[in-house]
Length: 162
Image (cartoon, one colour):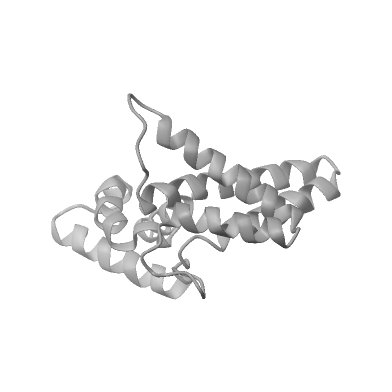
């Protein structure tokens, strides 16, 4: 997860701050604005609740995934409203943020993991659509953040309806 020139022990939030400074020096306006927005979202999450705290890398990743989802939805809304320039800006911001997320499982690996989880749950006596929660419970710890939740749910639903 580390970039060239940054130690592997650097936290994701620190990497975002370092990359922000680099993008500011390079005068990369889109990257700078996107990283500022991401760091603001991370800071907001860190002060949410009863006391401020340092977020773990997993928590920072969750914030980034939320921001990516927001950018994707905004791009679709702008494109649907005929505002191509704004949609393109949102897509550019999304691309900056996606670079910080772990690689997603490909379709074949996802299908194999879903099939194995469905078989495991079926062996325990649950099958059909009512086994959705049990299959998701088995899969979520295995795939972690390498699969978008919506994509995972769709794959499980498809496998259970076969």
